[in-house]
Length: 150
Image 1 (cartoon, rainbow, N blue to C red):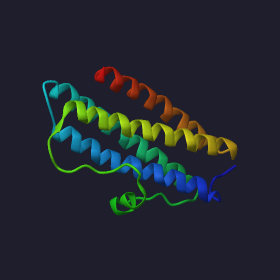
Image 2: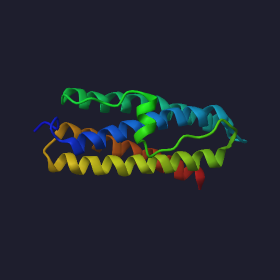
Image 3: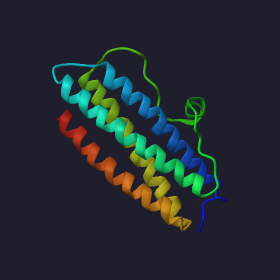
Image 4: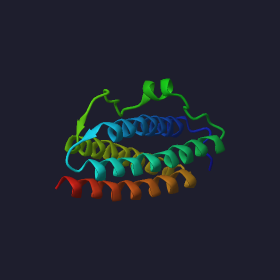
C-alpha cells in the first residue's frame, strides 16, 4: 500500500527530514567548534556522522517523492517543524558535544521507531524497512557515544 494518501505518515516523515536537516547543520557546528584533549577523534567522528546524515536525508526524501508527496526541502521549512534545536556559534567542550549528539540521536531513533510502527500498520513496507535500517544505525552510534562518554 502506498502512503501517498496517509497525511499523518507523510507529516511524520517530513518532521523526521526536518530533524535530520537541522541535525546535519548542528553536527557541522559541533565538528567545527568542539574543543578538548580528544579534539581530533571527536572532530573526525562528528564528520562521519554528518556524512551519514546526508544519505539519511536523501533516502527519506526520496520515499516521499516516490509516494507522490512533497518532502520539506528548505532550512526555513526544517526550522518551522523540527524538534531538534540549533546551537549558537561558539566553542563546545568535547564531552558536551558528545552529550548533545547522543541526545539528538536518541530522539531520531525514537522518531524512526514511531514512523516504522505507523508504516508497518499501514503496510508501507518501504518506509518500515528504511526506518528499521535507520534504527539499527542509530543503535550503533548511540553505543559508540555512550562508550566515549563512559
